Amino acid sequence: MGFPDAQVGSILVAGSGTWIDARGEKRGEHRLVELTVAPDAPGIWAELAVFHDVWGPFDFRGLPHPEVEEQNAPRLAVALQTLDALLGGLRRARRRLAA
Image (cartoon, rainbow, N blue to C red; front, side, top):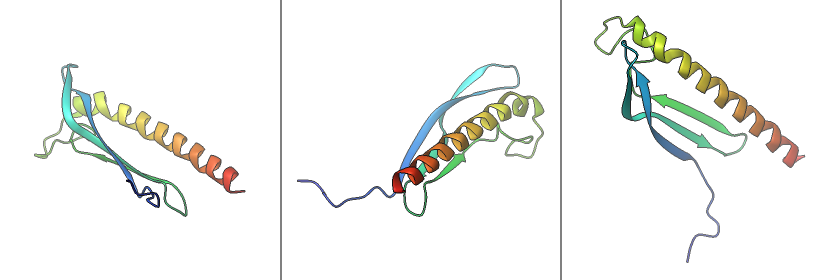
């Protein structure tokens, strides 16, 4: 059977991951991030959602935790830059295929 006319609307990747606490210890976290990618016209798009307070200067209670942010925010920045570069490459390849 199957659905021969089906098209992908979006893909959701829920990811467990590792964050680093104030003492530098690695901690595993279920569903630390989610990545949604959609190949729909007029162009591919992606959304990265984070579900933890380790990326910012304050925890969810509003208490500062600069050591935690220092350990994790640069890692998120690199991931975002890599994702941006990847999607930029996909957009360019898609335009070449469409031409």
